[in-house]
Image (cartoon, rainbow, N blue to C red; front, side, top):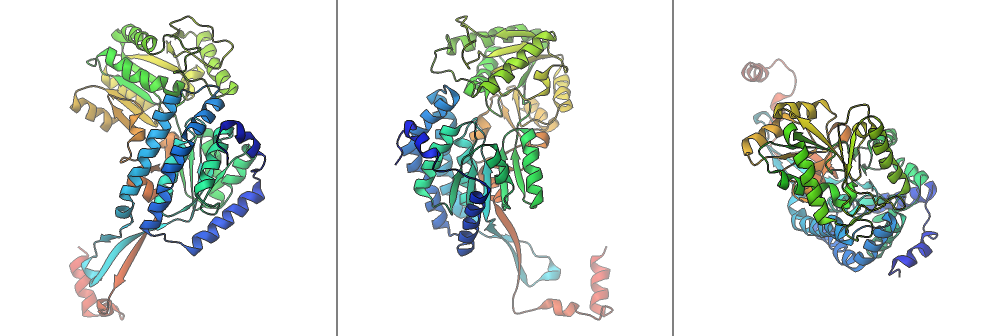
Length: 484
């Protein structure tokens, strides 16, 4: 049995996947599903309950694997952002699965009585889950829990950009589930491509918008329904009445977490024009207090790869060359040139010609944009593609409700950032270029279930009074009575 990260590499060569292997596993899961197409509530609870002791047992190994993949990832951030929400999610699904499974009684029109109608929630079959690199454990377990609660078999493709984590997670899952129930797939891009071509009963993909389009095209060949959790440029609006020191703390936490490598991290902040400089100063105070040093600070996470680091540096170079003001928050004036760590950096005076305004940032860079009136800020948000999340800071509930009504986003927080993602009882999902569909909460169970409408007629068949020929008095009575 593998117990530490140093042993993981020895096992990777023994678990290689290709198209034929993927098809074999898929066929095995399909066959197993046919044997038990409607697991009982007790069976599903057992499946869910297996995950908690396994996660606790493997937690330190997973945390170290993630840190190694990132070159450094703060263990506290992994606990807060991945382990704790996953454990809470396990408890939540175990508590609610029986209630979700119950048949829903529905109304029957008078013309169809005596009869009953109900909705039966059936498992879909075999579900494919594609996991990104930024929160590899939470974003694997997050959809796995409702998929198992709904009674499905699951294949999970882990990111090739976090290979140690992928292998460690694969080892954990293989200890508690047979391959024909839950299978974790590792491998490079060609494995991911073959994975998306399998005729799953549903695919859930979390990742970039560009890759999401490829997943959707592949799924279309099999008419496989998809849930896409993408990204985009999530805005934050600070009302002029909101304390800037408080805004800086709440926004700073959401942006600095995982060094900004979070799909719902605030991408740009709309700040009252006359308060921009004060807000910048408050951000410097907050980040300086939390991270007086960054380079060798275990509390501050690195960028996951050289490629991602170069992309982010390119955004800053491009923006500066086109007239932006770059403000790195680097309290100790450290040299980051030989590391993948980056200081949290504020960017002012941006415009649409800059790459930083065109692409999702996905790193420790935040744009600050001034606005004149709240209406202007709302209009600016509405002029952009619909984001995955929107954050509004204002203690006036009526104004906050107005902003929610007048904007569209996949999710939202009032006076906070990112926390809505780990609220178990509300759906999480994107809209427009930020994705489609949702999971978490009961909505996750519904995403991975077939809501089958069932009409039940008893011994009395009142419909026979409506049988042809069609010109009888009963027909004329019904048409004259109901077609008005």
